[in-house]
Amino acid sequence: MKIAMGNDHSALELKNIIKEFVESMGHEVIDLGTNSTESCDYPIYGEKVGRAVASGEADLGIAICGTGLGISLAANKVKGIRACVCSEPYTARLSRLHNNANVLAFGSRVVGSELAKMIVETWLEAGFEGERHARRVQMIMDIEKREQNL
Image (cartoon, rainbow, N blue to C red; front, top):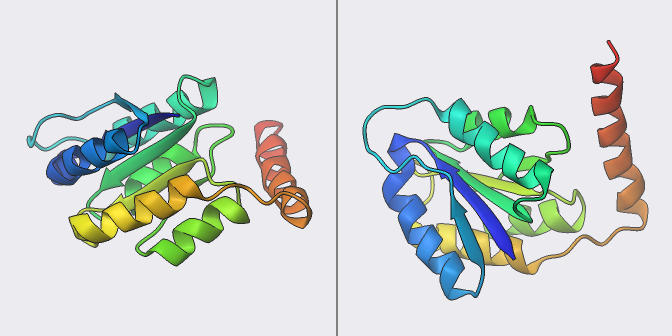
């Protein structure tokens, strides 16, 4: 799988750890930056990850900022993106099984590298269950369509 990754300055170190981990799992990583510790704006990188996934350039995305919240909000503004913030593996697993989340976000100031690896591994290994969840995911996507028509 191709995984798009983006981060702000606060998450550079964790992004590099997770990038190496994801590659060790046999996935290709598209690194969308930042690759600097100089202060930057997380919405830029959330949007980049969202656009890479929405366009099909990447299968899934991982976005990391201080808390995971800001970068996920930015990614979720891209049509077709269902970004989730996860600070533990259980929510990560269910975000894929039930919500078909296509972008995973977490915070470098919230989780350590070993927990982040567990979250990522769980999330990447889970797949969408479909069935009753497909109807609910479609309802979410319908909200997006209605918003575009306003």
